[in-house]
Image (cartoon, rainbow, N blue to C red):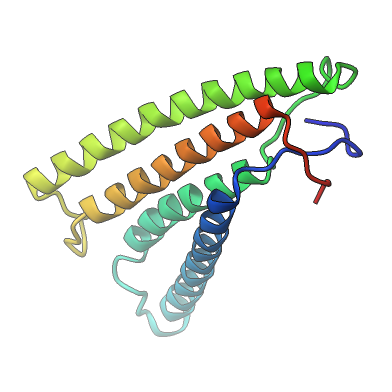
Length: 171
């Protein structure tokens, strides 16, 4: 993590404009899931009528929500970073080291995106559905894969900004 008074190189403007609404979508999805759980629990408690398949919605929406938050967090340089050794480094050295970590994160998430695309394809081909409601699972997996690609693009943008040294005041 950079020091609090140090400038933070952001992602390119286009990526920042894309990741914000995507994160808001993830937040709205999380609120919808919370509401669904509350209604289901109250229905179960007072009327013995829970929402059927609520756990299936929660599972898919939570996965999508998490992948929706990650690009914005990366764009804003909000991921947890430990600066035990880097806090005293010069800005250029610290930025290059941060760029190396962003590269490793981006490569790992590209691998995850590849796996998710393959998983979505396989789920579509096999007709895989959820256990209770028989909902197709491939759309949720595919959306997670697309959001993962957005995260990889965000990593590329932050790497570029770190290496070029583009600065901005700390948010």
